[in-house]
Length: 423
Image (cartoon, rainbow, N blue to C red; front, side, top):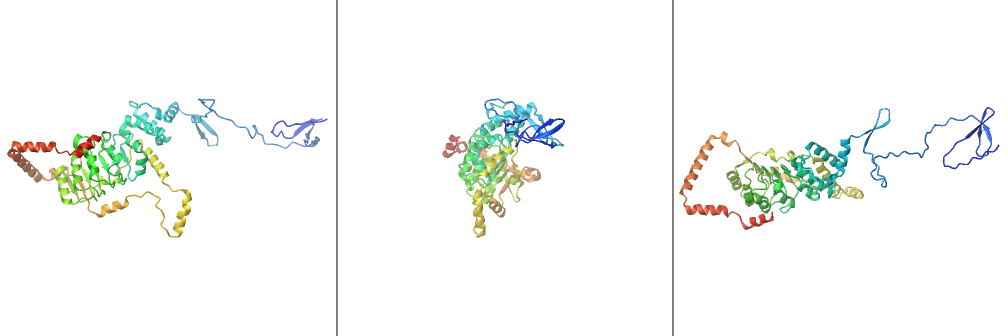
């Protein structure tokens, strides 16, 4: 009896057993002899080691063979078994639209509750951080929902975010609070020019502390309000502290803000402080405060709205470009060992500016709304001064009235008209 066993496959078939005359024999594959032995129990394996199962769902293109596993939710039970459940149709549609959010034509008239979920889904996929498609998608949301996307924006000490995402920041509409403190923007920055446009006429709180502003910058910022009665006409809180290039002439441009209730001009280049205090009180009824006001506490201004996490993602991307390389760690360690001063790797914050402002004279102003209620004598003085003004107006001749009217109409200079032509 001869045996011819050939392994045509790579799989191990194991030992071969033969039963003769009621006895079980094992065939030795090496010599071809038969041995009487009891079979050893082997672990039962349903599939071979190289066996695998591929789970394919909803293939849009069979040639590309793209797998879609996001239609199911995989969870483990207490026993350790893997189970999956199908997602809802709303979740599948929401995920598909958020993946292609930049192709949306318009969201005007779309329900706000669904739009917020769509914005969150696109934000989780970091769609708004992409250079071109992110801007186009963000503009669709801001055009339709305005302040719901973002009503307050804090960019304090975030000049990198402003430089990298300037167009995205300009797309925000109906902002009520904008904090640009310690950004060193200067008079000619594009963002400061954008603030004066009608898209941000809703801004009531503007913080421009330590931005290297001068009188020319204030003249540009107030030109639309002074001439065309638009722009920052609803401004209520303005912080211009720590801008040493602002002088007494620059303060005169602020008189066009009729709704201004709080003003901070500490650490500016004022020469005659007493005269400025008197002018602010007589022109726009702002009283000098001896105590620091809580309206200029920068901790109150925060980023609020749907795009709050989006701004944080922008900041994280901007900080990655500033982080030092790993190969520089040995160099900094050597500098510490030899006592040398290492490079400043973190962005410099305006802590020195804050300490100077505390040590110097506080020039914060507020509008006393209850002044007439607590001081009845001031009513009599105001009535008497009003009567004197009437008597003076009666004594004016017609020529003097014409001169005064001409002066009122000719208060604009040629530089103001040149500024208006740029808008």
